[in-house]
Amino acid sequence: MIQKLSWLAAAVLAYGTFTVAQAQTYPSRPVKIIVPTPAGGPVDMMARLVANQLSPALGQSVFIDNRGGAANTLGSAEAARATPDGYTLLYSSASGLVIAPMLQKNAGYDPLKSYDPIAIVAATSNILVVHPSMPAKSVKELVAYVKANSGKVNFSSGGIGTLPHLIGEYFKAHAGLDVVHVPYRGGGPSIQDVVAGNIQYTFEGISVLLPLIQDGRLRALAVTSPKRSALLPDVPTMIESGFADFQSTSWTGLLAPHGTPPDIIAKLNGAVNAALKTAEMKSALDKLAGDGLGGAPEELTKVIAADIGKWGPIVKALNLQTE
Picture 1 (cartoon, one colour):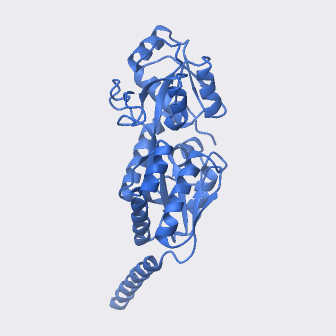
Picture 2 (cartoon, rainbow, N blue to C red; picture 1 turned 120 degrees about the horizontal axis):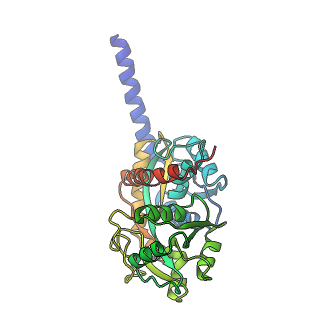
Picture 3 (cartoon, rainbow, N blue to C red; picture 1 turned 30 degrees about the horizontal axis):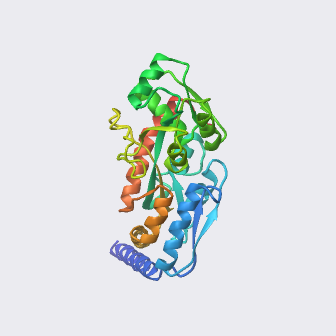
């Protein structure tokens, strides 16, 4: 029995020594970041910003591997199955990490169990916008207008189960509205029909809507972030507009397969936080209308858990999950 315990203690000590040594020499070869979306999209652009900052910080090449398909689940599942040694990471978003596995029964990963969080990197706000011909100039007035025209008002999104769709349903439920959802094949067509006056309102990302708001082609009523956007300082939050618990951001973060050594997670977390403090990164985020976040890995876990609690009941109520 004593010999068995001695062997176990030696094994634990050896493993601990190995992981520390591994972290000290990490990385000794290029690091791959899987992005579960096609190249050129917002998540991909953010991932490339992070990779460009991590490469010099880690002293190794950090490259992007786009694995789009199956509504973001293909690349996410591949990352979950990867060896947890720090050489394959995942850069994803609320849509890919939280919402996609809610919509697909066998997505191949669990957002809280399949990965070890490294850091939440950035977040952008979504905006509630209406066509300028709408009489509503505030959220309160929009609610009154929709209730006075019950069943006759439409809101759009880039498709069933997308974040703008779920935000719209969240608003609908919280305000007690009878409004029709019109899904499109992508955010572009959805926004175009609001601009054309065929749809009354929508929720979308600030980076996409900002030029249209500035040109007067859309009217912004509120942002969904906890605080006002520096890009639209006169536009109130949904919280300020009377919806106390209404907040939603399009966030992105970096994760590793579950079981990655803690020292490697700590090293990557430190590199991400350092990158977010650089003038280059801040300037790049400003251009993408993003707010740099960072912090401990646990901050990303909290955000994921909060989104599961927020969007899960809506997905279930609308019966959106597919086999």
